[in-house]
Image (cartoon, rainbow, N blue to C red):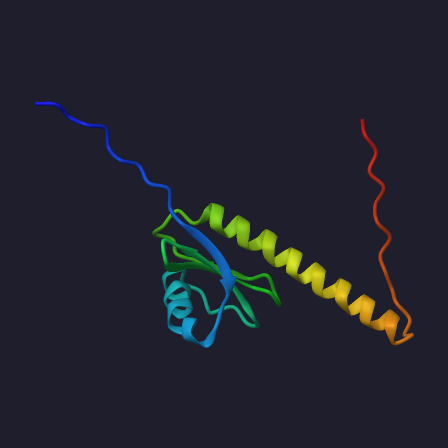
Length: 114
């Protein structure tokens, strides 16, 4: 009798904005995480077609299914949410400049190579 090696599959991961249709799934994940549903628009982490994590684009609060390996998905969500928030700030800055309003912009840090 020969035994074959187990078949390993890579999960399919997707990030997308939450819609009203996702409310029950987000509540389920928050409940599993013993947390409340984050406020504001949410970005979802979906693993193999199931909502497994969510991050608030407003506050950065995260909920995740503690019974699944979600650390990598949460890391992706946090990074993507930060980029979306930065893009929103940049758009606001551009809009203020177009309207002739004062803009306050933080100075970029200078990076030096060591």
